[in-house]
Image (cartoon, rainbow, N blue to C red; front, top):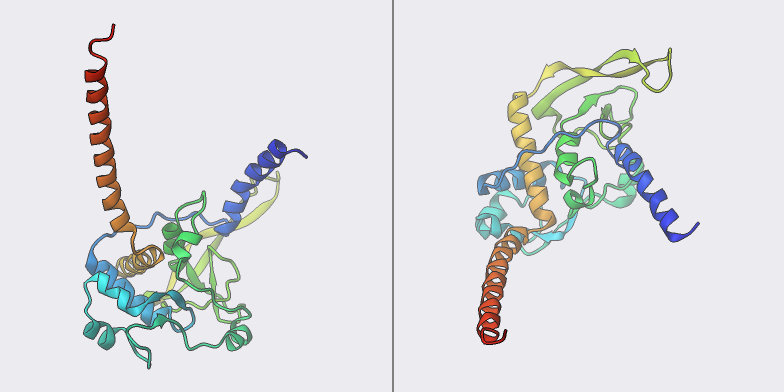
Length: 253
């Protein structure tokens, strides 16, 4: 198989890979949230609910000063162990213990918001949908399952906020095989309420995802601002070069 044929074969697989990446469940669009209060709340949620098992070993606590927090606020509100403000965001969970308890070592979340981008949606879309589609499943070791990642090893760490939900499955005709019926997702059923309404939980999840997107590339906002100035300067030099050329060739016919 020559190179063009290989390229065509790879491109043909991409839609299927994207579909598998989302477990067959469509991704919801993550809300755009650019405020500092959203990022600060997301950082708090991340430290309280994610750092128990996951690390963010490429991020230092003191980098949170870029979110408008001083070192005293970071130390009092976001440090609950002997970690130092200048230290990395790591977890006390040992890999060997995680392997025993969950069957897999939880991945590092430093750049997860960029790593999960696919033709199905952005990394933020993936995380926003994933964190909101956990449901109770007594057949799983943790008691939880997920629509985006079926048979996921991770438990629902924010279940107290969202409450306990189960899924309702409905039968419908298989679009790929005539006469066959398949079970498909028909919605969630709330078993017990959480400490938040569904709207509040969605907003909190959006803040968490917003922070994880910022963590994956803290310099993104600065890069975009510099990009505007670079384009402005390039436009100025193009105009200057055009005027210079026009002046140089004005007597040439």
